Image 1: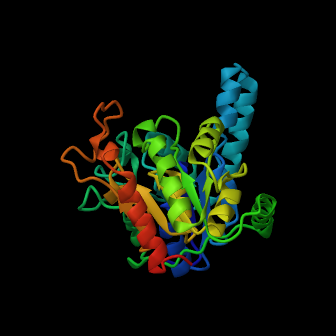
Image 2: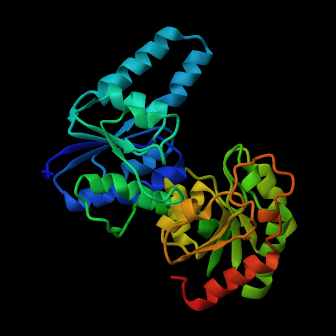
Image 3: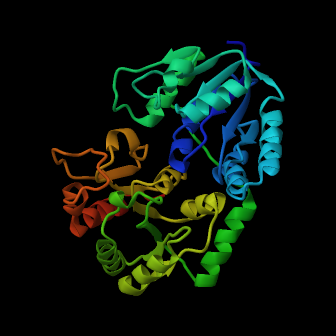
Length: 354
């Protein structure tokens, strides 16, 4: 491949999946520094991607604006918004379009782009029969291949050797200053652990019991003598406040954050604990040691990536599964506070902390 090729990356959402696409995208830029990489994305993660130097251009699909105007039956505004987006998307011709998302919507947007060749996943990894619409199909042998390794398969088509580049993500100083001001206002000094007991909307089946989080925080504070910061997002503040009250002393609520601010906060904290969430991957990419509590989701596909990350799980016959209505939930309910705390203590005492 010539080094000056123009490439469109299509990975619209979500936070975790976007982050797990970054190594493949960066590997292309490392191999071909003169290539121009544009990324089609939706939602708030677009701002975070815009700060990454290996990405030359962000194209934001205005999903929220389109949905809002359709809900109001404002067809003129809907048409105008989509027309402006389409003009931006088609403002240049791409030598390659890499569809890392693998759904019908991403295929449609790829086809609406001006691309010479669309490359996507085969039947094993693609969804909604999207594999039927690619010019080049890439597949692997292992259906449970980690998403980062899976995404590297697409970059390998462009001649990139199968290596994992060192990923260094950054945000501007203003975001770090925001977090430092918060830490100073709370008089937070020394080692601070971040705990995120929540998950994305509709994913409650992945959550470890919040009362266990309270007991875990108490053990961390009492035995490791550190402070704990509870992370929260939209719609989670009330539950976060209740957890803070139950956990007791040396427990604090995090300040409101967007993704870039949250990345700066995670860079500032000493260790991160949560279930399977997008923020878990953000912590891993921030270089913060991660303790991840996994239940029904497949750890082989979705685990935080890197030697600084530890997965706590139960090897039960029915896990992994996709049964959101499971009544037993043995895979996650059987994980004890002591098991998680011992992993936290071992990580903290091993010198894995920066």
